[in-house]
Length: 550
Image (cartoon, rainbow, N blue to C red; front, side, top):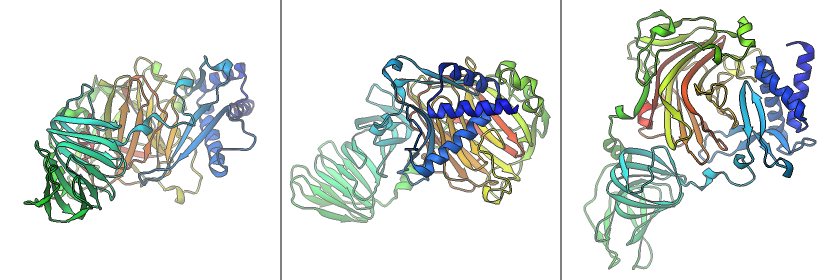
């Protein structure tokens, strides 16, 4: 970039941060960011510096107006994960601007900041939720509204008419139940069982009410059921449960290994025959292992070792065509075609022998996608799009390893703050509007998980992952037609064990994301001096369909 253009770009970005851009300057900055990759890198770097200042000195940066401020929000993580830093545009809208939208184009992606959907001082739409449906195995519900695995749940009455389900309350308690059962979700730490049977792995203080009694968890696992006559049965598998009958005075503590029945008409506790099986064992025994119907897209790269033209690789399921390179319309306009430094380093795809399965006894197999150092873009069209305009939940995963990477603390040169250098990322885009909305998952500086829903912010985890170990990237996309979308990202390090249900903690969970594109293009991007191996890419409707190492 020429010195005078470099200086002018910095001036415009700083004026954007300070809220001082005039209409003509906004148009000038749009053109720069749309057409100049170096300007986009500079924009990201300056934004990161501004974010660092805000982190160090608080959100009230002296002398920085709040009418338009590029800020990174620091949120506490109730789940125990390191906090996520969120970068987003925030507007204080003047009366004259209430009917307008500010359009900022970054990397030829249009950022439309609408007053109706911006985060404000009020709570997020997602704050009304109190639990997550972490398992929905062949489920049918009495409600006319379909409920998807992975969906966040508000206070409501749930009646399961078929299948097996599990709920994780925000207070930490997990509840497994099979049909038929009716449960009322009351708070993050309480529920009411109307009928059926539930298995509970509780947190101390969780209360489960029935028509006969209240069951207060004292840190335990237990099974509770309500039969058609209203009698409540309690089996304490571990720990203790306090039972308060509707008619009886005071609490009675039921200890591990004991079981009682409570009659609502008498309020008496009658000992009954117990059961001896733990929550996790019950969960694993109950859940179906066949997830083939829930797996929408899969590529295991089971091709003979060698170099291929992308059109020769047509394996897997759920794809609309072979792997491919970018079309002319999918290049950054003008400059990227003219600059050989920005085009693909190779037009071939390399398959090497190996495995990313974290088992010492695992035999090497033909089929690992290899990206040597350089600049690589590999695309494939999805036959089933991820439609952000339709309610639902989509999971994905991919096995990943980068070789020869130094951790940040061992590097001699400071890492770039731009995600454009030395990075691998997965991006979902739309073939109808490639440069509008997109959803990016990646690693910043090869260590920090990031999620970038273009147009709705930038999210970076403060947690680091191993620089050169086999990793499993997992993501969850909660799609809502008329409400806030939610994106989750978690990276597992081999040989970390995967559970039957989704994790209770994620590296990143977003706020303030609103998207409506239908993503039908997968883009794998590898840039820089890193040597990357990829295997087992999956997209599915359930956690179990994607959460596998093999």
